[in-house]
Length: 340
Ligand code: BMA
Image 1 (tube, rainbow, N blue to C red):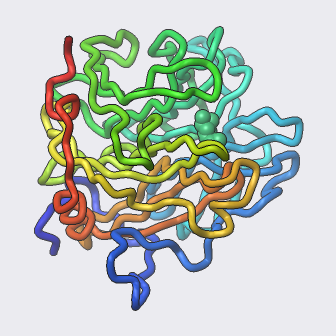
Image 2: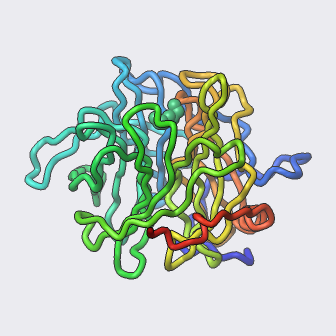
């Protein structure tokens, strides 16, 4: 039993590999069979990456960013027995409006999948007269009903918390611009009904550490723990050769998640392997989901690699929380409430 508790349903069949012998310092280790999804995974789709998964019954389900051969990204449904080998539906997800009529975004990318109470929410980036956030809900993974776009453009990397806090839904996002955004901090907003969003608060910004010195963005849905909300996010560095995306970790206050309690100054994972360094966009590790088991404390992190593949990495709750605390460096904008 971990000393830090994960507060969620147990997932006995969480995908897992022990830490490799000899890897002493790293808080996170990669699956040796990475990437778990290779190129041309389904007809008409050249690459799947930046995707999100969840336990579903005694197996797993996920929403996947599929880059179609015409270059337009869309979201595809996938199912898996072991959360490593995935079967995809060949048709992209068909969204409908509240009246059941077809209602497709022009494109959709970087989906997150979060269950709150008995409903699954898909949150993605899309065009809403500029880069913005789209959302839909489903209870059966057959009907996907779009709900109101939460924010004005320009905004991306929206990540829903897996439960209401103080009676409201909570959504992280990263307001920015419409291009290859050279700036951006993480904010949190709340809503009583998933339609009207407000009480916007700044959570955290870029920092002086090189790997997150340009911009940051939410990653996987926060994991509720006895220490606070464990957030895996991405941090970006601008180099003379383009952006480098690494995975970072922070712990947010459980009742007031705009307050950062601990924030790791070191990256948890940075591009090192061929599938992270080589691809459509080189040097990208982009986390979008975790599967975690509250009994064993095991955590599997799903991340997009080089905008071309899906990678899997592992950590354990005690280890990762200790590592984040031991290497925590906070700035004033981390610790304040985030209102001005
Ligand atoms: C971001 C997003 C991600 C992508 C990353 C690196 O702006 O578009 O989908 O993985 O750039 O190209």
